Image (tube, rainbow, N blue to C red):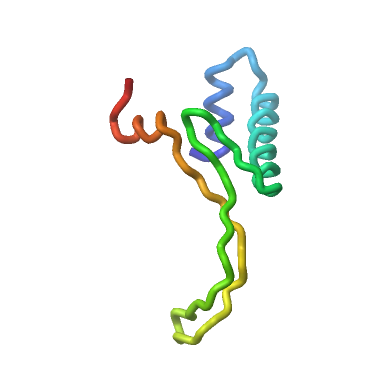
Length: 95
């Protein structure tokens, strides 16, 4: 599912809301999650999962084409850990 499909689905399920308002709400949620992660904060959505940022240390890598050693800089990467309810649902353990 992509963002526009999510907006469309929420609009269909809530006919009392204008689609442009739903779009603004969805964009605000994504922006707030992104901003929190950029600050290094953890974002938890109970039952769904938690978004966090992990630090990857600098290391010596290899160019796969030439085999030459390459310095890989330190970086921060997004990380998502599923919540128990989501994990159970994906594994067919619905209550």
